[in-house]
Amino acid sequence: MEKKLDKKSKLLSVIVPCYNEEQMVPIFFKEICKTAEEFKEKNVEFEFIFVDDGSKDRTLEELKKIRKLDSRVRYCSFSRNFGKEAAIYAGLQTSKGDYVVLMDADLQDPPAYLMQMYQAITEEGYDCAATRRMDRKGEAKLRSFFARLFYRIINKISSADIMDGARDYRLMKRQVVDAILSMCEYNRFTKGIFGWVGFKTKWIAYENVERVAGDTKWSFWSLLTYALDGIIAFSTTPLAIASFSGVLLSGIALLFIIGIILRTLILGDPVAGWPSLVCIILLLSGIQLLCMGIIGQYLAKAYMETKKRPVYICRETEETEEEEED
Image (cartoon, rainbow, N blue to C red):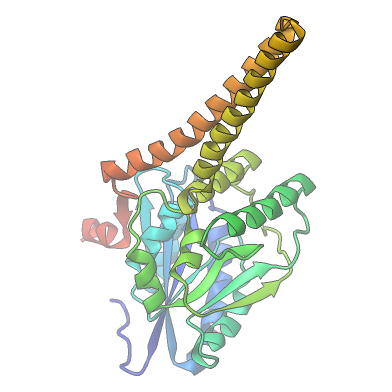
């Protein structure tokens, strides 16, 4: 039996995406339970929603164990790995709380900041309290450089306000959650969605915290792909660049043609140098293929949207498990 809320109580939903977090699930749950105790004096109850993103280890088994120990724990296990974006969306859809917080299971999102975030909403009038890293200690220099470059670029070319170093760790009112869920697109970039929906947000900065156990699931290339997805999702500037490149190169080619004609008529000097001609052809062909590739990326995203596929497929929840046991 799940505990019923008192009419005066508020419910806070903690959403935790998990992918191969067998080691971290028990550690994280122990820490978040300590934080939940501090909220009792605020008359705030907790529910914990773990989203198993098709883990290949024993993450699901660990979730089942803590569910048996604490009825506040809920979980959704995907039929395969759909990605963190899908896991966040599933958690938001499943949540019932008046307030909802997103957290990683690796404890890089310190639960100790949760009370400060809650006070920012309930006492300072904010709709959302979000976190950002002040530094990137422990992160490879090349990775940090490209991360900062990404934030600079996307803030210049899109309408989404994305803070440099922003984490997914944020506490939101139900109104904000409902606004995010109203954006039911298949190709999701949550950091951009957070910025696009707006609302009054307080940013809380803290020093970078390394994982307590396990390894990161994000490689350099997966982060690069994620960044490109974000740019395509929230900006059409690459398409404008492709169009501008075509106009610019056409103008340059026209000037070269005029110059060649004048040189031949005035000096009678035929144009020589096939190696330079080959280089120019290769250059222009490369630019054409690049522009076609940019257009292709947008077409691919539009193609996926028209399929109307579900963002995720849930294979098992705590409810289906308990029904089978009965």
